[in-house]
Image (tube, rainbow, N blue to C red; front, side, top):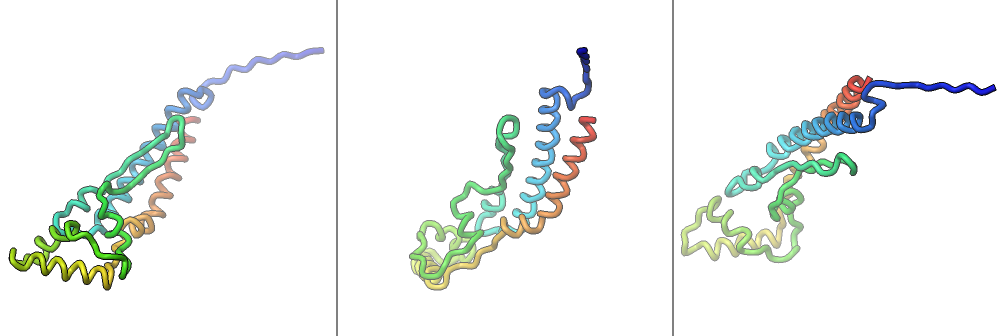
Length: 164
C-alpha cells in the first residue's frame, strides 16, 4: 500500500525570495538605527580640535547583507582619528610639524615670528610626554551596547511577526 500526500504552503516564510527581502529590510533598518546611535555617541565624545573636521567626519556604512553577512561600520577617513582615539605614547618619535601646525595656529595663536619655535616646542613635548587618548569610539560602543542589543532583539521579533 502506498500513500501520497501533497501540501501547498502559503505565506512569506515559505517563499525564499520574499523571506530574503523582508529579512534584509528588517535587519538593514536595525543596523542603520544602531549605527546612527553609535555615531551620535562618538560625535559627542570627539574633541572639537582646531577645525571640528574630525567631529564632522564621523560616518557610518553598511556593507553586505543580501548574499554576504551584513556589517556596519562607524569610523572616520581622517588619518589623525587614530592618534586622537588612542593617544600617542611618549618616546614614539617626533610628530610631523605639518600635522600639528594648524592646531597650534588655531588654539595657541602664536605670532608669526614665534610660530616655528612654538610648533617645535609643542612637538618636542608630544614626543617626550605623549598625548592622552579620548577613546571616543571605544566609549561610544560601551555606552550604546545594551541599546544596540535591544534594537536587534526587536528586529528579530519584528521579523518573526512579519513572517507569520
